[in-house]
Length: 76
Image (cartoon, rainbow, N blue to C red):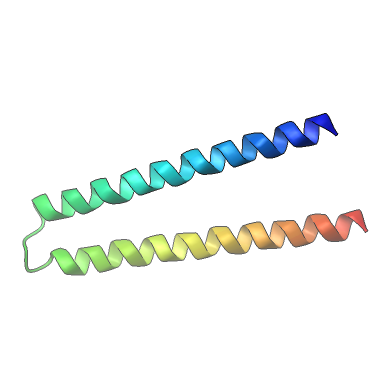
């Protein structure tokens, strides 16, 4: 019981740190695009970056939902 609570708290802390680091990486990559890519092509690279973030977020959500369904069916 106590171990499960500690595990859940550590997972939540890890997810918060991950979200903050992804946001920082996203802002830094946008700054790099603004600096090193010409103004004509910067929107294209930003769209590609946003698309990559979207695909990654959908994959992570799908994985988490699938994992949650698996654990709930194992308990039954």
